[in-house]
Amino acid sequence: MSFFLHKSNFLLRTVYPEFWWKIDDETEPTIYLTFDDGPIPEVTQFVLEQLDKYAAQATFFCIGDNVRKHRDILYQVLEAGHMVGNHTYNHLNGWKTDDDLYLENIQKCQQQLGIETALFRPPYGRIKKTQVAQVIEAYSIVMWDVLTGDFDRTLSPDVCLRKTIQYTKPGSIVVFHDSLKAWPTMRYVLPRMLAHFATLGYSFRAVPQPTYAGY
Image 1 (tube, rainbow, N blue to C red):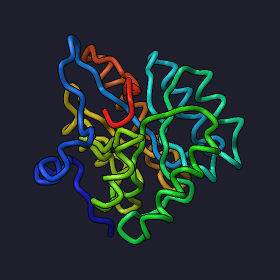
Image 2 (image 1 turned 90 degrees about the vertical axis):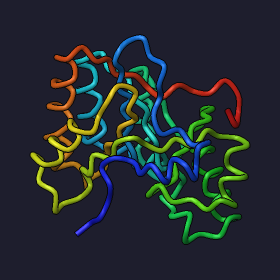
Image 3 (image 1 turned 60 degrees about the vertical axis):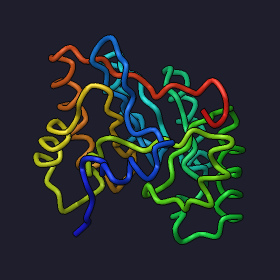
């Protein structure tokens, strides 16, 4: 069974205040949807279709090797007006990876993306302080306020939806996954989550690109 917190931990926010956990100071209730681990055929395209129904914008944190294999889908993401971010080339766990290799992997992903982005999300949310010190010179490190848990096969889609709705608040950065592992749950939860918050008057936006590196 996977263990994770649906709501980001207050202590972690205190240890890493320079990370983006949520986005406040909004004039209207807004949710920042993010999707990790794509692009993947059918899965990412399903996400794009659902977002389009609500004029929703999102940020896709892409794995470089998936971009290499499915570049046409990356173009579909961009053409639909969404943002992209760097999620390393091989979905590396920073805690288990040498700093130089980790930084090289980020750069390799950036080369595959082929467009400028200053948004980075560490896979698994795991990154060493020594890696942060270097990454943050070029990227804003985007974490999350709400982790849906769509990747957890032991979590029923109904519970995933209920927890996601329970913890999502104005300004929340919410993580879904456009991956094969998450696909059975995500395709159930995402449309219902969008419908729920749209009815309440929420808008859905992409995480904004920072105006300069390290912001």
